[in-house]
Amino acid sequence: MTSSADDALERAAGLVLAVDIGGTTIKAEIVDPALDAVRRADVPTPVPRPGPTTEAAGSGPAIVDAVIGASRDLLGDSAAEQRSRVRAAGVAVPGLVDAERGIARFSANLGWRDLPLAGPLRTGLGLPVVIGHDVRLAGEAEWRRGAGRGCDHLLVIVIGTGIAATVVSGGRTISGAAGQIAELGHVVVSPDGPRCGCGARGCLETIASATAIAREYARRTGGEVAGAADVVALLHTDPAAAAVWQEAVDALADGIRTAVAMFTPNRIVIGGGLALAGEALLEPLRRAVKVRAEVFGVPPIVGAAFGARAGLVGAALAAQQAAARAGSADG
Ligand SMILES: [Zn+2]
Image (cartoon, rainbow, N blue to C red; front, side, top):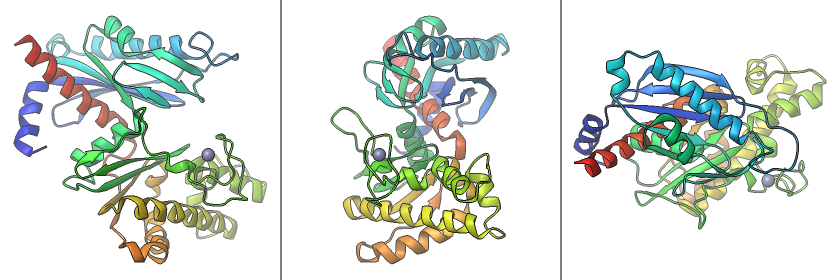
């Protein structure tokens, strides 16, 4: 999109509501045309009830209520003038997502299947609502407005509790037949490695996700850590931390080699919680990728611009587009 088209969209869009449904926290923001948060609120994600993964047994209906509750609080706390300028809502959703029909198709972590989301939220909030896959929206945010801006062949890898990627090729994001993003986390990098939730062994995310890094460090040392950030903090003083970290970096480089061989991006953006490690991750990763992928041409590897807000920013961009569509339909 050209910057003048961006500017026109911003003017048409006014304020939007952006929501990111995470495994532990639902984050909501009122976002201004420049994509900055005007107000924000966090609520805990409702825990799934045990039982078979169905809409009724999982956390689905409770999550719909929680999103509506947090959003209403946010809008209710705003001045009436500001509230009236909120034109649409965008919601970033984990798992498998049917954005077109507004349905959250499946989340193993949150225990829902075929959960209608856009319709109930539209009714509850009285706004146009669009939903999208969280990693796709984060990727769109980095591509259109962040660290991948202006790049027509781009890989945005999001590393958190899992690993997934948005692939931009020839100036378009690539989708699977059912709208999937690239499940880079399930590329096998170590055939004898740990068992993955998908049934295979040694998937990239069993070694290099933030969750896997913390788990492996705890297993080797018997020491509990709250997360991968604790392992990063020990890199220069604890050889076990350094070893676990290097193994994760090597696994990531193996996965990236596969992606580079398939898509030959001219930039790679690393986002998600693990990217908050900054150069402690990027510097050894560049070296490890260079060794493996030099034959394909190694693109620059950079950190995400929006950090942990990327999903929210992508949801806000989607909401701006929905507001513009609603505006042109009204006119
Ligand atoms: Zn897997």
